Image (cartoon, rainbow, N blue to C red):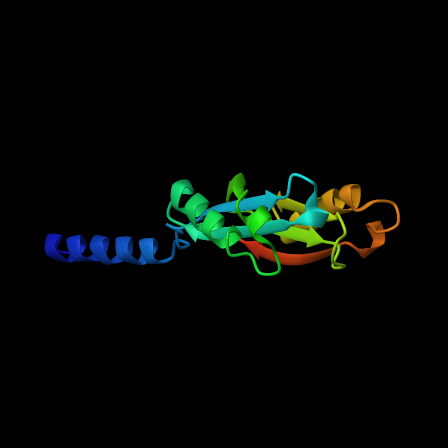
Length: 148
């Protein structure tokens, strides 16, 4: 093979090799923000999450903004929104007792959606009280980056 053809061959094979690589996600930062009334979740619970952000700072800002606009919450809880965890290439879940005025609320982060769901349900059941533990359910969930 002539030197010119060798160079073209090397360039083409290099491009093919690079094209075969899995995509790299530039945006894989996530955050979860929560606000709970000082009297307990039964008096106000707000939550917001952000995923696939370029960095932890933006993820935190976006999660707090969503928490402060959390539907079904009140101003007391929304005013207390703060980031409880930053994550990358993980899943997040929020679990609540759906009945108004009940204290069951929890969140979780895990390598898989199931792990995040389980962690959120455990925390919800721990705060729900003996009569309401069975009613906790995952109400929001999402994975960031490459997590599933």
